[in-house]
View 1: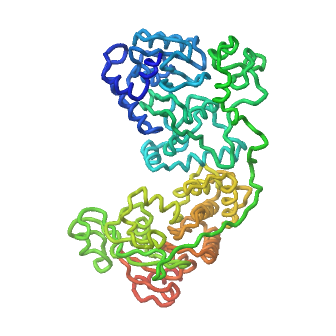
View 2: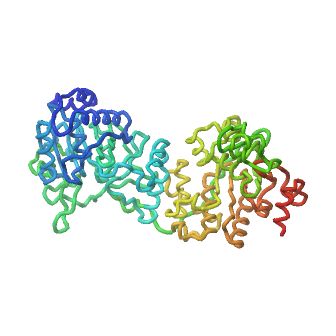
Length: 609
């Protein structure tokens, strides 16, 4: 038996690559599965693609799990197949027959005697040990599918460990229900790195994956993915620091057949409960179990405790003003500095610049045909100061802002933040992941259209929670307190805190977006046409709010607008852009009262009409 169990170690997977060809799967398919399984073991929780193929089984039998099992079995293996905890169900019986006849291996219904367990829905109640492999068939492999439909965006989120939307889904669940209601498919963090789905097992079995001595392989045939939990790997259910993880059941429930109270129970006839694992239940009745080992392995400490649950619904807790962290500035007094920023769309780079700009009256290069959207834009912003960037559509102001945010890569120039390496490192040299990280912690952005800055199907509090959880907040009540305080600051009624923002008016959506941008106390706030598209009275209210917030906070702000009244209301200094160049700069009041450049004079005249 020891030799059989050792064949299922990682070394056994390597040896199996040279195994003889037989069965339903050709040797090439088996090698593909074994290589993918080895990769999955090396990177716990990571979804490894493999060359899945159609299998001669009915839909719902779990072709992914079947392929993994067929690919791993060796001459000395003993297989156990269970379905919903039952060895003798129709699916389990037919799958076991198919596997045994294909691979000519031994079969058993005793978990203690097998080397491979193929299961749907359950981890056997009998504690598994070193050398054994559990194969679970997975209907949906992607844990982010419920919060993100784009496959490429899901890949990016995994690559950057950006799981804030997963935390938002848990937050929203708690708000609505007071508990996290996910059953099968509960998300877990594997090896402190990848979030993994635990479909098909129930919450009862999730804690049993943590630090387990056996190897667990998940096979998803439809999505052509294999992922793994190697032996003795950390597996932690996602839950907030102040919210208990809960499994199904209660201390009062007992199996009607064997009397067990430390197993996963399913409802039976007459409202009674019975063990899901038929083998275990039978062995308990035959007194053929190690009861102490099983109880020690059971997740009884996670049974529900109603007294410890959070209070959902409308927020009624404390709204404490948080401590605002100090914003760094350099010895020269600036918090953000932009030096010679330029962006060229098309070929040529700097060679495309001659023949463009205000003097030429065009942004299209006569040499290369490229569009010189902005060039040689230079400014800095001090702590507590607001800088305006004004110009007509096509002047290059929004392009400069997108370069600062990281939505576009600048062709030339540099950007520095006092809070990043003392203002000595060029932010434009950061990769995309580093730029996104800056937008969470250091830069706050308010989009012209709130749809671009908010998740419309998520509540106002949940949108703020998205930014806070991305920044590492993991205490549910602290997130609620912070969100409530911010919404009060932007004058959003707290009785709307848990309503989806898609039900809000345009002005209220913009207020929620401002609250979200300020959630992590960013050192720099960037505002892109913050009142465009709003009715005049609503826009005036948003301007009053922004004016108050900027006056109260030591934040450097850059305000981009084509409207001089917005710039005049919010900023201390202003640069004026025309055809991609800065044509005038100075104190906002002076520019408005005494503009020198003809283009600025036209803007001011238009604003005074």
